[in-house]
Length: 354
Image (cartoon, rainbow, N blue to C red):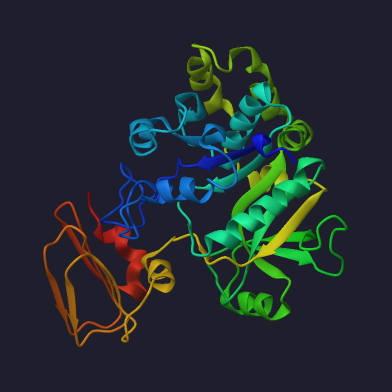
């Protein structure tokens, strides 16, 4: 496998406003330092792929509204590799656009597609898994999705049902997919956990560019015709003008519905590298280091007294003192303060009037 053919596509167009008050629709979570480590989730995503390909082969697909945020946070990314969507159309048009553009210059490209707002704790294992999957897809028609080993009956993720009866001859860690499952209720999630062949769908995909382009041609011919027709304009001064005109005509559909649930050569690579999609304050609490009372603190000078099961995110305050709370979120950003029960965080949008 020629590693120069490896490309990484990072989807960074989501609104990601569930971490209010840190994130808003104008400044979504992929562009903020959720972990308090000095780097945004987008920057951390780029970093974790540096042992997969060089920065010259990294691509960011984002909303036109976030163009300056991306350029400011990722100055090393080639501006030609920052693709701007004029409107939201879900993940299938996003992936089609970048796939045709990559193929126009490198028909042998081998691609990883990933969201921009996840965290990974075991970077070495992550890189090993991704590189192993890329080797598998380089010379095959396979589409691989990473399946996270389920550790709890999670109702917030979709699942992948794998056929573990026989591994692929060329990679004993990869298996055929039997089915994709929607987010389950709790009882169904408990059954999935017991059966051992159900994995969380992380939304990370690996394929070679010819495979995904051909899949679009077969299963999404209308969308395929749009981006095939734009071949004369990629890497030209009129590319954005053409995209602005034609991208909104694409069907609003996810890659799961458009391709993954229809294609035949679909495989899952079960993996465990400390993954979370950080969809909630609760998931952030679950994935970070806790003190003896199950509290997570992100900030320089936080003091908790008689408090447990809390997450406190106050990176802009000089000193924070919390007393007597159990199971709360305390978060501050840009003169906005949130104090909310973790069990009620789904209601934050009701409270967060911008």
